[in-house]
Image (tube, rainbow, N blue to C red; front, side, top):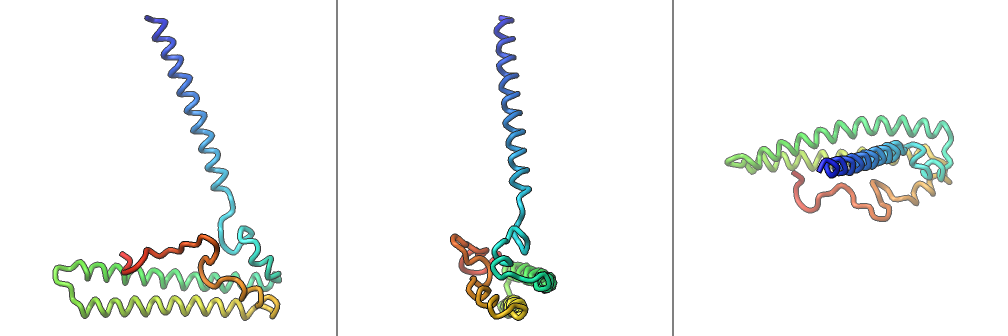
Length: 162
């Protein structure tokens, strides 16, 4: 009886050691994956600046332009989210006010149009920094988010986004 209990304990201990080893291996693999370079205007996005053969001055100017663009875009996106929250509250009211809802929808549409204008403006600003040869390469790539094989975007389908 004691021998069985000891053998059972040894078996359980071996299994626990094996499970611990597997967990450590899994953790190590995730840290390796997480340490890979991300996306953005960096070496991970090779091809963009390599294909265009940008000069160091162009890279610097584009990065400054992109930083300014992203700062404005973040603020505009925050404003849009606030408007969507406002709309959500209006729609959930006991007696929704159609005029107020329509006004909020108009504000949302105006905000989305302003964001698109900002994005197009940034695109044109970057394009203006390029030589004629670089513009041909720049214009050949898809404009906007994604565009590559399998791109799904961030849309949640038809209708309002809650």
